[in-house]
Length: 354
Image (cartoon, rainbow, N blue to C red; front, side, top):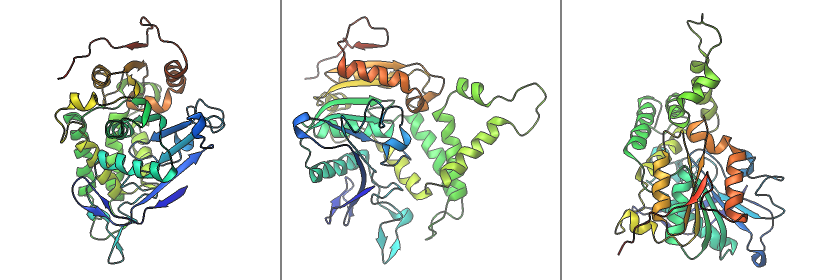
């Protein structure tokens, strides 16, 4: 992991200021402007900047995006747990600010990414890739810096976070607030709340069929200690060992506030500002970001194609279905499209906005 200490104030969309913004990031491969080889990844809610760690099968030494061919960049997002300015490493009176860290938006995150881009001396990003909260950041960046992003891949994401998604996030935050250790200067506070929040979140990340396939007890005689119940505990504990409740609060609220139409004429006009050749990918069983949201993106982004992943794993399918994902991306980047391809097609229903 590398650190970029900006040594400058960073003004957030809210007007609040982060002093001496710090950005943690990873790079893989060699930057070669003559080859136009930059692939930038914007990560999802609780991920870190080491994309080789959490998206192997797509990013890795022998994967589609590898350091021998590409210069791969991934930056940890504002408010996160993994090195960029956040609740545990931002201080006031020599104490971490914790639940008093300022509110951030996906637009703030995109602007921080752009500071790092300038620092790295990158003029053009050949390919920007983001899924879920990462896709929300990528959208904001592709709108604000539409001359710098040449190709864009948006996976399981949306133009504006839904009421259903906000309700899921608020339910998780209620679990954080119900933990009496949360706040009050307690650096380790909210751990049990975070465990509960993650268990709630898993219900939106997976699907009925996915749970049925992997968490159903064999036989007909079980009355307690169900696989599905232990799985929820496991996932909650797993996150609590590597993340903190204060970052979870900040990032979930940033996701709620995501709306590319904010302070712009409309969502549709904002999407039409994107100049990048775009692939939008949806997952058939995604409960949290239903495929209709990706169809909407592909309808309004001017040069967009739409692809679909079939999966029993719901929203998490973008981390599981690597074969389908790499096939779609390879077709988009390297092969000619045919309008009658069964899983990917050029949309033809775009409207013209005056």
